[in-house]
Image 1 (tube, rainbow, N blue to C red):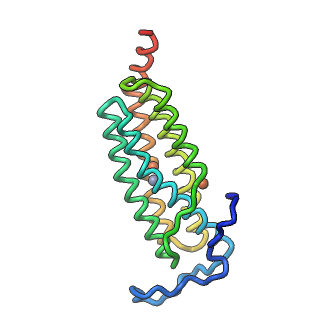
Image 2 (image 1 turned 90 degrees about the vertical axis):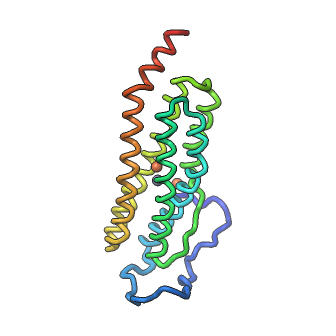
Image 3 (image 1 turned 90 degrees about the horizontal axis):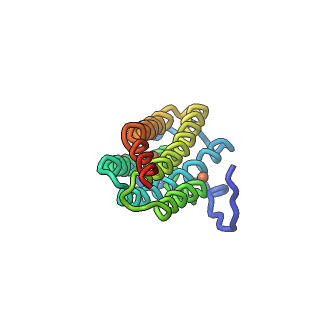
Length: 200
Ligand code: ZN
Ligand code: FE
Ligand code: FE
């Protein structure tokens, strides 16, 4: 569970989701009411929504810091994918009848700070920096994999296979990103970095 440290609680605990004007063609009520589990799920969505938006801002910095074209391309590609993840989450909020809302994810902030300190601590243009960037990015991917895995399972438990399917496609893309980072590390960067150490 997340700690709600401060007093800014404008959550919708008591207020029912407002009737937004617009596209309510099939007026089928969603089978999920505001159960405790749905509240918990909703909270998790806000957290990962913040995290994904934060990554949209952070990935360009990582791309800029990367030494090789290959890694720069990988970050660029994942930036585009991440924008899709943001949109999918907005879809999920919509399907739940909530407005999209972000709540700061302390974990993601910490992980990206770690990435930034790696940039500070390593030399520009070195494979060692790339090793560090890849590790930092993989920590991010693993956090996302854990989150989307959990949320997908929760959605199924709530009987929302429609939502589970959306989250699952993001889950698969996070896994793919993790695998391609491993490949970049194993194929080139790690070896080059080990050579760098010998040279010193
Ligand atoms: Zn993502
Ligand atoms: Fe979090
Ligand atoms: Fe990701």
